[in-house]
Length: 254
Image 1 (tube, rainbow, N blue to C red):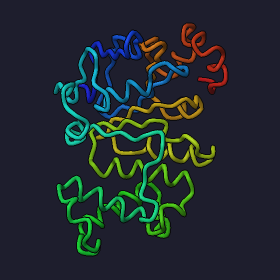
Image 2 (cartoon, rainbow, N blue to C red):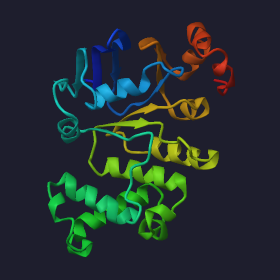
Image 3 (cartoon, rainbow, N blue to C red):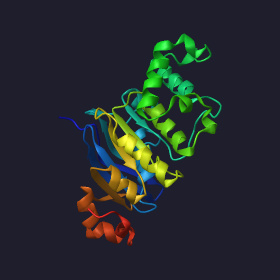
């Protein structure tokens, strides 16, 4: 059975600097996997290579058995590889229901009809409402202006927009960044409970969230894979503990 996503010798050079160095890893179908590493380890660069935001210097990105290394970002999205970003990029004056409905229309190739009243798109609006309900939006939150929502809900809206595209693989780049602790736990718990037809790769620096979410962890250091395994194994791994200079000591006990 093919992995949902894998890389083979993926490398990215910036001049004489190697940001991602011969990375090979596999994300199984339905995975709940985390990508961690010290600052400067190459995590975001790797995600940019996976999503097509950056071209690789060498190596392959394989999505569901198909080599997508030469495809631009929008074609990878069409094939089911979707990502979120560290910095929120939302329509402040729209409601979550309006934004997600537009994403559903875009997925269906009908984004050009965005100017028509949304009530003219009942099926798409119903799909958007169901998705928001699954992500624990109340009716009031779903119909409020986005800029009036708590920050945790805005981060959750980014995930809803990604899910509206019906991904097979979802790359979450620090989805809890800037979110208060109580809200960040809700974000990750909700994501972890999504249907297993979506494989999730979480890029995160908060070890409490990583160990709460991940069933498997890949560790980057200096652009290369340092270790990979279960949370318990990673927590005990001496090279990982050394790379983090004590940060792993704050991870929850296995």
